[in-house]
Length: 223
Image (cartoon, rainbow, N blue to C red; front, top):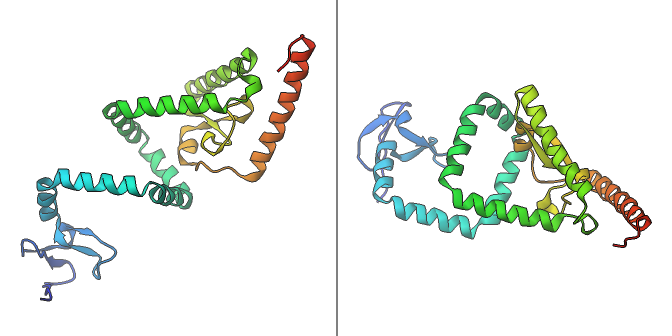
């Protein structure tokens, strides 16, 4: 049986669920539909969602688990293609975004604790071996974070400490790989790294290692 749709004019459409003719604004958009709107109105969609909430959420969860890489690639591509749009939205809705992030973090404490522990472990693993017990390097990193706070307070703009070569891409947790960015710039940038930046950081780290080992040996120690 083929469904027949009744259109009063270009601004109205009949819902196939409740059979009522409503304004197009009462339907969610759907780019795959010929007229650009879903066949079921918002009211019926909400009623269905409330009646099947747990089932729908479980289905979405299963999909995300089975398609993690695919979803990550789509999100990454979107961020790359919409950097200016994301940055502009954040600037206009800064307080709203921060409140949403705060509320989400509060509602997902366990997830954030796990993330913090995982990131801490990643940092420890990413610390160059020759700097594991170097108090000078530790102080440098602490000073960078202190500078971030000072800049944020002085400008009234939130700043972040960022790894130019991301830890997730094999970058070192080292003072020479850190930079201070505005929160807007940091949140809108991707986790990729250009070849030149990576090459320069590798070269600088190699020089730092050589200098550290020369100084260490002159003090009667060996790596």
